[in-house]
Image 1 (cartoon, rainbow, N blue to C red):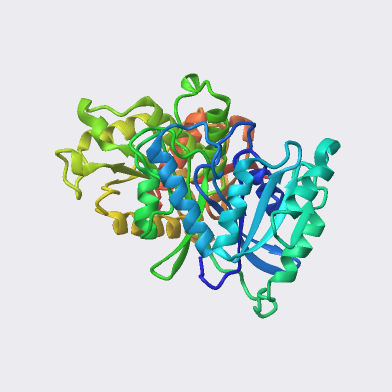
Image 2: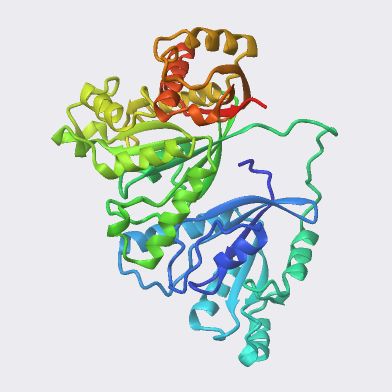
Length: 450
C-alpha cells in the first residue's frame, strides 16, 4: 500500500475488543472475534473512508498477557507490534471498561508515550456500567489528551470516535474525474492445509516479513489482505488459515478460522492451492487437497496448484510429474487442464512464474466470444452423432455470452425437459475443447426458447 496513506493502528492488551472495533469501523467481519486471549496473531489492514477521508486501519495482535508459551511466536508478535508502532500515524489505545486498568495497560501506555505517536484512548465495553466512571478517571491519569467511551459490539460512541479520527486527517479523498472507471484489482486467495508455506509465500512476494511464519501448523488464524503491483497490474493477495478435514477440526476457534478461509476464496477471482511437495512420495494426492480443489472449481473460481518446498524433493522446478496431472484429471473432471507449478517459497524459486500464471488465467476468465462464432460452433455440434440420435428430444436454437469471471453462456433450446445430464456434459466438453477453455471454470446455462 502507498506509504503516504494515513495509518491508524488499533492497539492494546489481549481480549479488550480490538478486532470487534476493527470490524465495526470497516463494516466487515474480516477479523475473527472470540472470547479467548491471543486470537489475533498477525496484523490485518484495510483501506477505509471516514467522513470522506481515506486511511489504512490496522488491527494488531494483543500486547502482553498471552496464554501462549512458545517464545518464538511471542518474539515474532513483539517484533511485529514494534514495526506497526513505528509506521503508524495514530494509535487507538483500547482498554476494557468492564475490568478496569491492569498493570499491562499501564505498561502499554508507557510504551506508547515513548514512541511519540498521536494517541486516542478508547474505553471499550462501556455499555457495562459497573466500573465505567472509575475506569474513565483512571484512563485520564495515563496522560493522553483524548479519552472516549464506546461499545464496539453495539456501536455506542463510534460516531464520536470517527469524528475524532477524521479531524486529525488532512483531506485525501479521491480526485478522479466524474465517470472515471475504478482501478482494476485482481483478487487472489492462497489456500491449503496447515503448514504448507502460505505465509512464507506472501512474505516473499511482498519482499518483507509481514506474516508470522513458524515450522508448526495453525499459526495463521485470520485471512490477511495485501496489495502489490506486478507488471503494472494491481493484485490483492489474501493469506488464509490452514484448512483441515472437517472431522479433524474440534476447536471452535479453528472452526471460525476455517470458515473465514472458505469465505475469502469465494470472493476471489483466482485461487492458488498450495500443496506440500514433500508429501508426494507415495505418488498420490491427499484427499483433502482434492476436496479443496473441487470446492474452488464448484464456486466458479480459476485454480492454480502450487507445489511448495520443491527444494526438499527430487523434483525439478520446471517439471511436474505426469502422475500429478493424472490424479487431478481423474478426480476433477470439471477442469481437464489445471495449471501446475513447482515452487520454493522459502528460496523464491518460480515465484514470478506463479504470479505470471495468475495474470494469464485472470485475463482468460475475461474472454468475450462473438455471438457469430458461438452460433457457428453451435451449428456444428448439432450435427454430431450424439445430438442427431432419435432419443434426443430437444433442439439447440441460439447461443450468446452473458458474463465474464467466470465466462457465462446462455443456450436457448426447444424443450428443456428433454435435456439430460449426459447431453450437458457432451456440449460443455465440446465447447471447452473447441475454444481452448479447459483450464478455467465456465458456466453454460440452458433455457427453453419462449
